[in-house]
Image 1: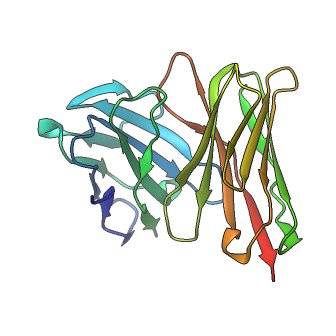
Image 2: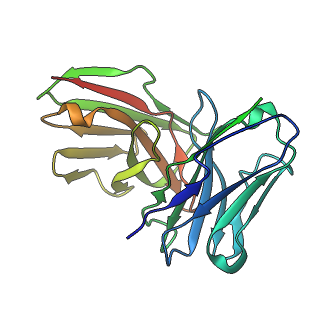
Length: 114
Length: 112
């Protein structure tokens, strides 16, 4: 069974540009989560989808971040316009049952904003 | 504010010894606590989950304890091996949410 995949693995962009990160969860997993880790800090929650609906987006830092999950399969996270402080590693995770179910993480996308 | 603390300094131990990692939290009432392992360039990998009404959980060479009075979890790896070298993260989930709240992680180095 394929795990959670993320694309790209690395992205280097300039301040003010737009970047779109993609996450493909494990097939059949209704729950999809985005997290990020900025340099020197802990991994922090961004948002949670159940199928195509946003269940919790309390961790989204500001309106420059837009997450979508059309059709309830893969998800995209767009940053527009990117700022220097957006640099970090963005992780996606998925699980079947939400709640106490184990979350399976992807390898992350390392975003560098210059 | 909610805070989860793990020793940010690396833990260096000799192969065969028991590694003990600590996770302390404040201003939080978790329903359960999870431990993850993270290797460089990879995402966290789930290891163990322990619920608030459980004192101890074991899985092979791993043991987790959870003391809600002390607001602390201890993570033990017995008979440690160089392959156990990684960063170990604790994460909490409260009753209200599905999201994980992570500590900063502790890097473990097991020397042969």
